[in-house]
Image (cartoon, one colour):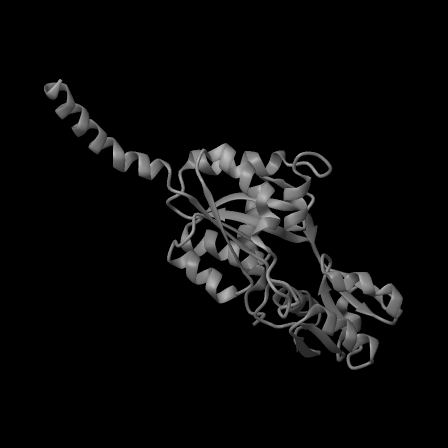
Length: 271
């Protein structure tokens, strides 16, 4: 018996490190770059359906970290401090792919556009806004850059940009004639207040990727495929309803990598 116990113990010691590697949790960062920075972050319980689905598919725990801090997210990306990043700041995901060698997993639906809003009539293109004062998100944010890129393509810098920390503040500026025009993302809650304030969408920009999902270099291809399968199999109104609503999207697709990789080239020079 003693002779059997010695090799058995040795085998268990060899397997122990392997078991700990297999059981290592997946580290998932969810980054919400919203225009309401004063709001508290949602409770982690909000993402319980997403967490359970991923844990079932991967057969290991999932640890979720939430943040609204752009700089922190990119630092984590640079340092490989998480396995997977979900962010509605698509420019950060694009940088992770093109500059850091990250891998693409999925993008969410629907796409997001920027809406130029005002009290006047719709315009065919943004040349009509030359010389106007335009309220928009801060220039370093995803949608601050998109608003600026849309304007640049039509009128260069022939306008006065007024940066705002919150999307609601953009609408307030237009409502109170502090700016003739505002620019907000189509998925912002501020959009819901436009009609009641007599403000209209006068121009809609080109679609941008919503909530890209990218992974660090160390995540195995099998895990990436499993995560993509989980996300793309979610259906609104069915088992994935809670997971999708927690992220503010209606679904995911494995398409969109090429468009995401091209995003920063289009945004370049807007800051």
